[in-house]
Image (cartoon, rainbow, N blue to C red; front, top):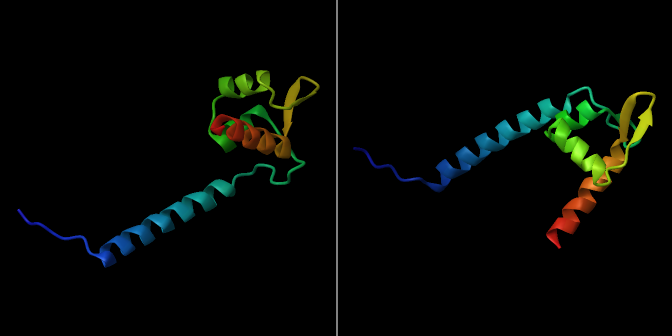
Length: 95
């Protein structure tokens, strides 16, 4: 059985590798074809993909005050409204 010590250099290499992996995942996620402007409209399915939530969760948020608009038979969310809703919800849950 071999015992190895973790040196500061080993930790530095491990952290750099993890940061590089995280950066790559983040870049891949942001390359998705979702609206990027705050005024762009998102569908319910866009919300699910961007925020990694389920459709029932989107419906729960809609019932609890997430702003949306009906366009014909479709539902759209303004990205800036969604971001603001989640920020306010997070603040109120921390209080």
